[in-house]
Length: 439
Picture (tube, rainbow, N blue to C red):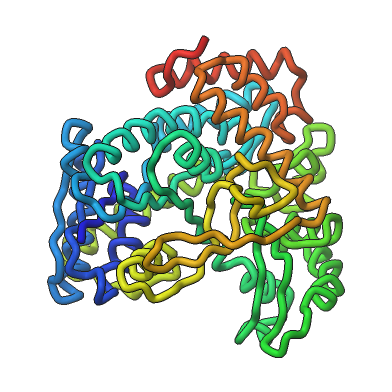
């Protein structure tokens, strides 16, 4: 068994996913192939993973591959390929994604999934995924590609529509969705044995049903508690609670993410909304800086102690691999192409997030039917941007980048068309060689 991790310098994901595999009897004897273009970051990941391997009984083997010239070797014969790359890293590309739009008065919180930041991130990542797919088609054509990189719907949608590689997109927001909601509303006693149905698109999948262990619908009580929650001055999950009030349902991803997926909350003409909803502008750059600092401290500790314990996390990757290898079924919320009307009122070429059964046959998406019309409408405002961004990456036509930005709910509600085009041009210039030439 060979498990290849692309972007293994992404230490947090490498630690969780490979560490989880080391905790699983059917996976722990695997070859763990770590690939990155940054030798220093790769060595740091190798150090922590070797420490974890030692703590777990020294099963399996870790191999490291640095640089594009060694990419095929890293992929050759892989059964599973985990993707966690970040093209351009925090510095310079994430900084550019925030600072250039800010000059035009456009503020963001996370900028990795939608908005102008999500668009640019997809445009610099898709060409790299194209290269990955070409190599995989040659040296591991039957491997399952597990994508963790954002923007999830754009990247996974590209892989599924334009490459022959079996792909599923994975996001941990599905696993934590209902638990976070019930804890926020003081309903922790309803957690054991609960049943849920989640479907939509990545970061805006809807908690369509939530029942307790006895089959009692929890939404009436949830809705009765929302107003009290919204009155709390320090509450940080207000945007998603407002979704319940105005659209009827809760969504999977955090309020700081969803604050920038629509035209309602980050508005220069209404600055008071930022304080009212506790929206953390420029949140992602702060997280990047803090994460880099935390990792430096953790790495120093590992160098000193040499041993790193790990308990299996709730990330889907190792459970998917285990289900495929053993045939024992496992259910996930996966990002897949909307083939066969999985969600009836979303387009067939959209990348949707739906329940999926995983077993020895691979990832089998489940048909959900139609979303509530208002939920589908909200999803479509994001899908429009996703499809146009993929179109821009495939055709390399700049007009599609303009159109994606114009139709982005937040960008289009803040800036006029001429300003949007100028901002796009400035972003393309600032990203330089991280983007292909557009015409």
